Image (cartoon, each protein chain N blue to C red):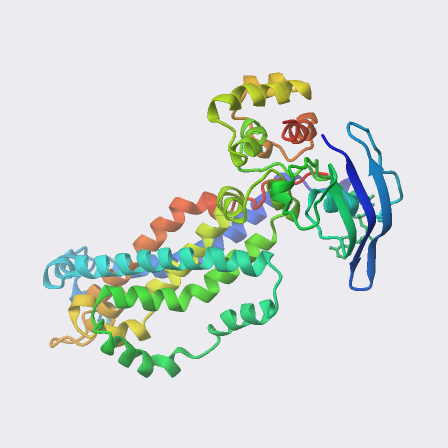
Length: 280
Length: 155
Ligand SMILES: Nc1ncnc2c1ncn2[C@@H]1O[C@H](COP(=O)(O)OP(=O)(O)OP(=O)(O)O)[C@@H](O)[C@H]1O
Ligand SMILES: [Mg+2]
């Protein structure tokens, strides 16, 4: 038997190799974009292989001066943060109701909420366009905020609901016998306990929102409401051809905020859920 | 403390019997033990007294007053749960203080009351020396888990 026992470190090494390879696989496209973005335009489309790429900030200057990239980035950030806030305010009570109260049609309502996610978005594109036109909200970040919130609401509700279902019922019963009302229980116990889950749901919503393209394109028809995703698409049609290095750089810049958010909340994303709330 | 009467209490979930025809009269300050095999309805009976479960039939009286329709939060019943149910987002001290906050006891009295409750279950040292101590610090069951849960009910 002894010969078959492996040292602990050996299996760790194996794990590192696999995870390292996977990390590299995910990272290469991102670094590739950065490298394209920081090279002169002439070097990007060429027949000859380049062994010593040249460094150039052409695209960088172009992105911040010729285009109001900072403004687009601001549009993205404002509309996304706004939409996530709207979603959390609506989703937390909805999820609590779906997770804890029993009433007729609860399952159906829950499924209805989820099913709004199953429809192909293009089906409602035109009605939504006229809706926002009549509300005089075209070309505003408010419209984007509402659209993103509507798109993500069902998913965020369901994620939060599933976290709430994992909270032991006893915890709430204890609070109730302690004299807490439903709202108190939600505010003082449920929300703090599932905070990592709420943050996770918010981040997932934000990632969906930053990648959203169809409705953003529909609503943001002038530059005043362009977001990163739509601005990116518009770079392809310049008078002097496709400016690949600028596109690559913008794509990289669009990636950075998401990356920073995920790094900042990583601790919460992986934290244990009820943190050992109920023993025995 | 008060006198508790259960009159013809029954609990059914669909076709499942939880509790069947319980009649008890517990007088004030009487110490009572429910003993029985697993699944015979001990917990369910206590949950009905605390107001966490509605009896399908029968009447619960506390101090002669019918309690059936009174919400759990207004019954002022203290219950220690099988799984302790400590709030993992709060320190032990805050766990013990929680019912005081919910029942709107004046803030100035909290500290004294919390300490007295902690002393009653002989865990005064833990809650006073380290008020930030949180039930979540350990996954293992520790002696003060049960005690702090009990302390919470000592007011
Ligand atoms: N929410 C519920 N829905 C359906 N049946 C239930 C529910 N809660 C309890 N029961 C059933 O009611 C019966 C009594 O349960 P109870 O928890 O009161 O038993 P107990 O005496 O506390 O058991 P133990 O000693 O294992 O704690 C059991 O058969 C249980 O399966
Ligand atoms: Mg039991």
